[in-house]
Image (cartoon, rainbow, N blue to C red; front, side, top):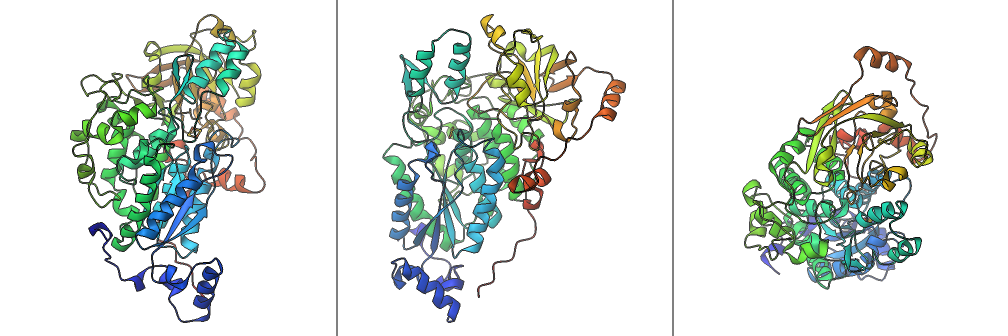
Length: 579
Ligand code: FES
């Protein structure tokens, strides 16, 4: 047994001992039922019970390999003297879940928390990685606060098409526009369909998945270097096995997420987000994760990091490489090594060492993929926070993935009442729109979407694509896929569905965007806005039953992390009575 795995807590004080070690009828039933599954008494009595929380499913291609990885984790748990139990959890495959996985992130978080609370487990290994699964798993683990380690699913392997690197999401959007502009054929498009995602694993661009798993690593919740190991690399099951071994040590040390996700760790997460040129979705998730840890993170903290941290990861969509390239360039430890003067290096991590110790000696092997600080991928803020009369509680823009020529812009609004309205009219040749217009999408927020779908990168109208237009200013209360790009103002808060100023915008109004001044302004006199507000009527509630009722009544706004109000950090929930 290594030092890290040396027991500190007596076995009789393990949480699972309440189920298994008592001398009464219920404990008899717990032991009896565990033996019913073919385990021997000595397999679980007095051993730490490890939940292997698995978000595998056959409609979650990014997690298609996680059944195998759960076996690797279990191997590690057994070898370290624990008892692993695999628990399936809600699988949020980003592309196939409708209307949006974000609608269910909080449901996954609730499920994880209640699984860990209700069952005889002492700690957890969390398997996931497709966009919302990382924050969902971590939020649940933070709320329950048992020792936990995150095993990222890992990115899919590089893909190529006709001699070009192609990345999931980024090139889907690019070639969709090229198809609509008549630059590629339908046959090309069908051929691309089978080439762009060629192995299991999460999107191979710096989308939300790669951003969030890297942030989890920077915050100390994964083993060092884990987040970028390609899903199909033999190193991935080795990492999973090591995580299984390590969780047993964490249980004996009682090393909980609350000791890892501190204010300083969050600051490291924010710096990492910026240096990755990461997804704007991480803004919402980090605020929600902080909330579960009892920490308040406001949007100004993101803007402050954006002003001082340049993009170093030259990965799509902000750069020109894929996650496999990033991994072989040194992965996250190498990038963090470049940032080390801006990090809080004494934060604890799951392996029991500090972040500083974990990244000491990490090397960059390819300066083109992980750029030095004096030669960043893009100058200026990767993500900027905007405010103004159109977004009193804030909005965000991924400046590193936007056309710099549009960073300061005044244009006439073309307003879509909701996604259906946008789909019906965006390509209408009669739509009154030109390259200088500002496309506005209402009703895409946390309540409105519902669940704040990734509709914020509104498509460029077909007639403008034909003229060569590839970017426009777009404004919405929705989100944008981390794999996408464009001058898209997102997460406008408060959202239009609850009467935020976005609901008051009309066709032809002038909107001003000034990224340098962090300003988003609706140039309409206050009196006129007051008149429109008096006329505005709240739409009726959409859901009368099921999960949608919870969402509609309890979800917070984007700047609050879109978490449910009743899941916020507070007094601890009583342990279940064992009878
Ligand atoms: Fe799963 Fe992109 S669709 S990570």
